[in-house]
Amino acid sequence: MRNAPIDTVFNQGKPNPYGEFFTGKTYLTMLSEKDDVFNAPIGNVTFEPKARTHWHKHSGGQILLVLSGEGRYQEKGKDVQVVRKGDVIRIAPNVEHWHGAAPDSWMTHISVETNVPNNTTEWLSPVSDDEYCFS
Amino acid sequence: MRNAPIDTVFNQGKPNPYGEFFTGKTYLTMLSEKDDVFNAPIGNVTFEPKARTHWHKHSGGQILLVLSGEGRYQEKGKDVQVVRKGDVIRIAPNVEHWHGAAPDSWMTHISVETNVPNNTTEWLSPVSDDEYCFS
Image (cartoon, rainbow over all chains, first blue to last red; front, side, top):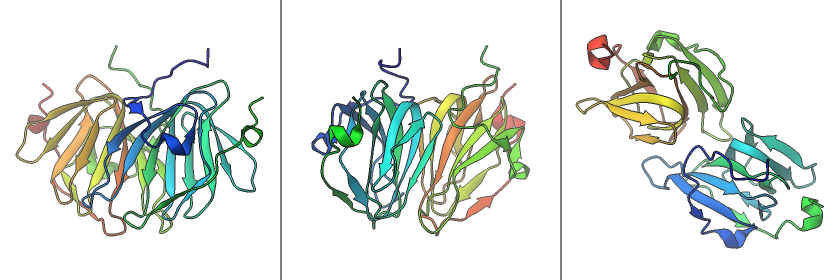
């Protein structure tokens, strides 16, 4: 059954403290906190089925590494992509996008913030059900 | 049986082209190549049992995320640490260290180079059998 919790590899963590910028239930563990030694905040994010980020963009870009399950990724103006365990998503600076789980599968990805400390995130509108298209 | 290939999550890749700086067989897939868009080279490295890097240091630091198996990590002058799937190793700039598999287990980790482009690697002497202590 795909609609079940999955192997998150790293700890699943707690309910996402940035939940206001997400639709549905998500979980976050920081694997490496933001600091000026490494300048590379790394988080592990787990999405329940249908859960997804709001539309957003990062001024310094972001790299996602899919660890488990099946998910969705879309850049503004392009088709929704299916992503799975083993996929890498390189999101260039200032590209508006969203990412989340498949309608019937959990999904876990690592998130690496790039070009820190010159990277700020701008959160935009929620991804509507029509945009997500899970019916 | 631990002494068997493991789930590398991402592709295991080809024999490591930097094998001259490693002892034993290792494999490398670049998940994100070095470039000036992201400034975050990310590789997936798999070590057969007993395989390990030479001693080395990174002027900009490195973060390792252990995906699978059991391994070893040591900083110069400190004890060898056992690391396993789900562990995160934050190696500060200029800290001399080595990493590799356990004597009887494969190990796969993601490697994130930090503070790029100001990060160069200095390779030092091999980790001797006595240092690795697998007998």
